[in-house]
Amino acid sequence: MPRLLTALDRPALVVPVHWDDFETPLSNPPSTTPNDRRRLDAFLAAVRETAPRTTILLPEYLTPYRLG
Image (cartoon, rainbow, N blue to C red; front, side, top):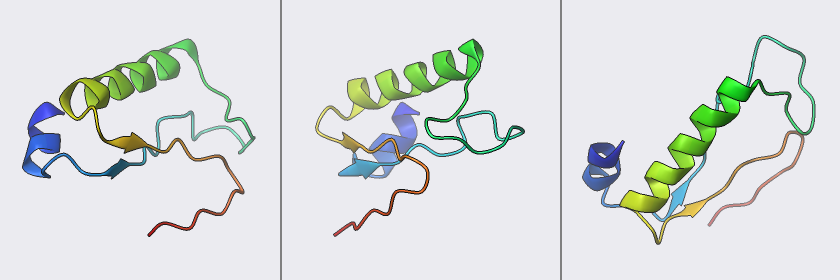
């Protein structure tokens, strides 16, 4: 992860996707197992450590976002 963020010149925005249990029906908030949540938390911590100025957008289902 740190190498990727560095190679991307510490992007302004990171949007985590496919971290939840995509075998279950969509819900908002997404249903997660404790292991899914630990993996997400580790990912978010790695982004914050490597690229502290990067904004992390954890999207909510059925919510439109306008970027840019």
